[in-house]
Image (cartoon, rainbow, N blue to C red; front, side, top):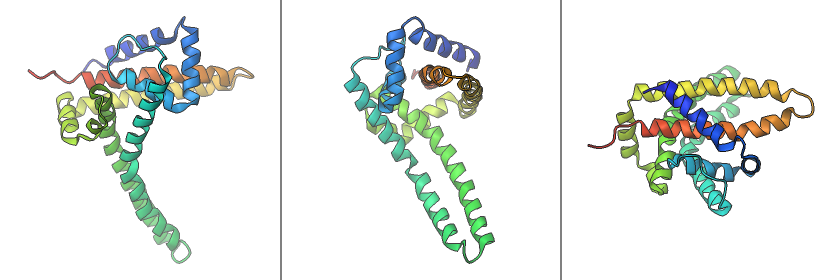
Length: 215
């Protein structure tokens, strides 16, 4: 997997999506405020469209965004359940034995962290399958998802996600610094957010498409 080429492609994709297209850029900023819209735009990117799609058919974008949101919530259910199992008893034990409560909470957080990572690895591919197959059921086709990740290569897949995570940290630092600029800082940050969303969605799509095609 050529991580450098994937980063370059994703950057060019995001730049071409908005640079010089100010009306579209403003629409995407509005979409980030009405967040199901930007999620629907991500679905279009996940589908493999190139160059970046236009920000039109807002009803369709909104519906796709709601579907993607529902998929994310369903995937998060196990995390919520585990948190409830460990956090609620820890709170109840707090008055009686603070150390026991703290231990229970600590164990719970470790389990939540591990489960959340595993779910994120699966859900990321599931969401792209939803977009490319145009079926919410495909987002939970776990056998096909695991098979697809296997074709990508678990090691390559995890490294690719770590690369995206590092780039995300750099982006967060930059936007935090820019947001400190008086008066216009918040506006700059607002305009940069859809660029990052497009970049990340394109990068994840390239990860998905890096799996060898069936012979």
